[in-house]
Length: 236
Image (cartoon, helix red, strand yellow):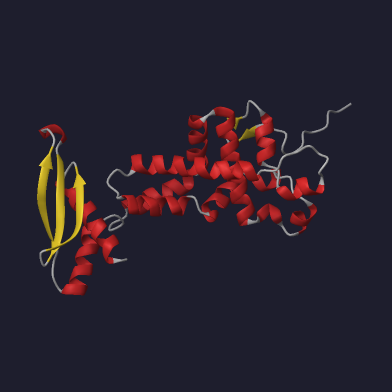
């Protein structure tokens, strides 16, 4: 007699991560609509895990971006993080993992094509990230998240490397020429630290008005950050 094939959510593996406690994964893949229709099933839906996953994801992406792009300002890093933790990239990653096929949904969600809903898939991925965190700890969830969002992180790398993609000096110069018909001036106002690890502080000025201040381990890095902060101020 043949053994029945396991149900879609019984395999405790997502991507390269294998769960020690499969109940975390089962909960992460159970939508509220399924539980509402089967109140005697004993199942938990994934909204609490979604709440936790949102916080874990935010920390992972903040840590990754701060390490990956040490030259960027807080404002620029915040924008990058927002672009990574929004529904579109999360749902795209969920589709690559085929999470939709593994979800437990109620009849209403099934009939309304819930398995391919952007919001539902994004929420499910956040729940799975929380499940990995609870099952294996922060490092496991970090590795898992970086892996499943590899495509999105690579796109950001490409954008940052494009000519002018992070050339804030060029962009601010163009803005100054258009607005004031003047070129900005970069002034080193402070140097600190030993010679092998010196930190430069630079002001970018237009008509002696300071538009931005930047710091970096090279003059170029400090000037880029000063120009970036000047652009952020100018665009407010």
